[in-house]
Length: 274
Ligand code: IPD
Ligand code: CA
Ligand code: CA
Ligand code: CA
Image (cartoon, rainbow, N blue to C red; front, side, top):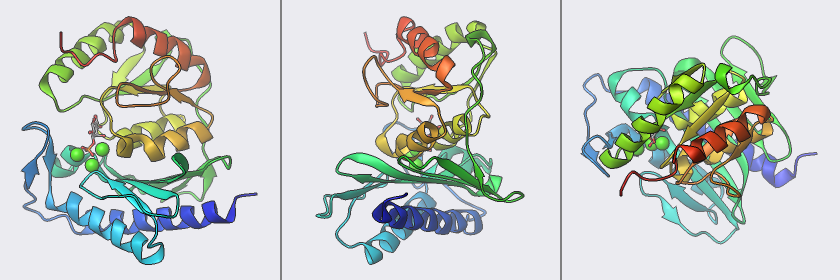
């Protein structure tokens, strides 16, 4: 039985992600432009990233004023309840800017530092994914009702479809491209969707055999990591580590360790600096 607090957090996460998803879908200005850049000239933010984070934090703070926040667009408060919300208001900003459909809202809740709830809404897919720790992962779709998520049966690595992403920092990207170049001949193929949260949910939904990326932030993977794990995938990073900025890997159980080991051999967690 789901802990009543976790059930409350899940309802709130799902509702806030849905509202922010509607704002982003219906409120996207036709002349949407880059509002600012962050870590590099290609690391862009729009007025809609900021508006979506504001909507989410306002909505959650109204119901749970004692909780803390960590949001990509600046939300950072400690809180006093032991609950912290980890928010990516718009994951896949570059896709959104160009009018490509692969973008999502990602909201996780941590209790005493551990993720207990995750919700990801992908409005242009008409899909939403969610998980509560120990309670499995589920999806709701525009054309089907709610369904359980479970990752794919594991193929041999050379038949695995694996997604990845590239960081915004030039040296890191160059190194990531080199790792991907050496990985492609060893896999069925590689995908680069442009939203880490959706990549993780696609592993959960059995649409990808695996996903890896270096340089993610907690808001990119907090919700998707829980959803993938609750769907039966294994997730982690460097040996003995969980998902982190250095390396995030998620895959079907039989793909995870061979993929992680291969990434280790290829130096996938190095940042590309000498
Ligand atoms: C980015 C996306 C992308 C990943 C980048 C992330 P943002 O998030 O998840 O797929 O490759 O590393 O930073 O900036 O669009 O929220
Ligand atoms: Ca961003
Ligand atoms: Ca992100
Ligand atoms: Ca973002």
